[in-house]
Length: 148
Length: 318
Image (tube, rainbow over all chains, first blue to last red):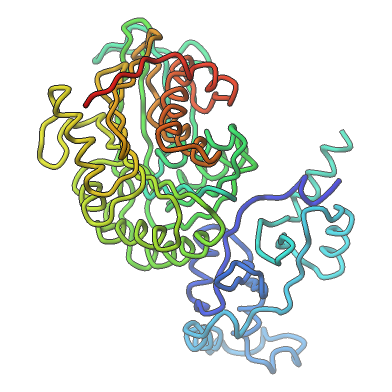
């Protein structure tokens, strides 16, 4: 089986110069957990997920603590989100984006999903332009139907 | 992707087949085949038809809410080859209800207005539209316009596509359609005359009225124009002349559902094959006649369209 067999031909994406607020708005309305980041030619230049935004909003010293449950709620998350919401997506996206091509094997995508802990993998053409996405459930469903 | 379809006000179409439909009466549907729920809106319909004709297409729309999600999921399930690039806004995508009565040969349609689109959503959509333009040859902008979207916005969509040397086809009605045609005329225009027969403040009554309107579209800069005339005819025009295409086939009124979209899809198919506008119009007519053979949507094939290329009379209207 190949990527093209489970490809969802959806090219929803955010641009590098769009804001974190734009990203959150699009994701919440369309129930996405993340989006490919593209340039004006639709070339995938990165990927941003809800995790990336939460990581950016949580104070960095939190990672040094075993638990934050003893800290009083100081609305730090809220305050930091207010601060970064006008920032561009390019500041928080992961680069380079992990991408696959339509002719890649399904096992290659499954391997990437496990190793890189990805929920969604953008699919690109030979020029690196977005043609769609592969999801974890798409891989599972595709493999299951093929077996049946 | 060779074609982009733009549907600013898409819908979930609910088609109910009710023999002997009467208002003020309780009707029970006889089975699942009497009821269909499909993605709709003129541009979405054209995208689905182009997909079955083997043309790679990207469908662009502004969706909203739960109904929007249903539309998106159904489109993906029915036509997985169609690329989608949707933007969401608040509210709910509209539902269009059509009650088809094959006994009395009637179609009763109830269309809702759609969600109010805010400026932010329009900006987000425009940005994605500009990006998509670089990847297609033809743009079809079709259907009604939701509340909140201005005529200027529609004109901007046409202008940007023309600037990038794309072939632009527009189907619509009302002030927005007229302003778009007057301001920067698309290559192909088709007024949607289902609800009103008035265009440019002129009421269309006689054949001459229709022919004059077709000429007016060409004078304004269109390469081709199509105007539906009575049930079985279309007035078509190019810079070379004006013709009346009349179907030789018997056309059931209850089978007219989607024939306008089939006409547009046939034109796009012809243009995509590199045919002249006149020949592309013939493909449009053949596709529309082929579509009348079905009650359901998106049932065309290339062989069927070509079968009906001789199924209509052509006479000059000049």
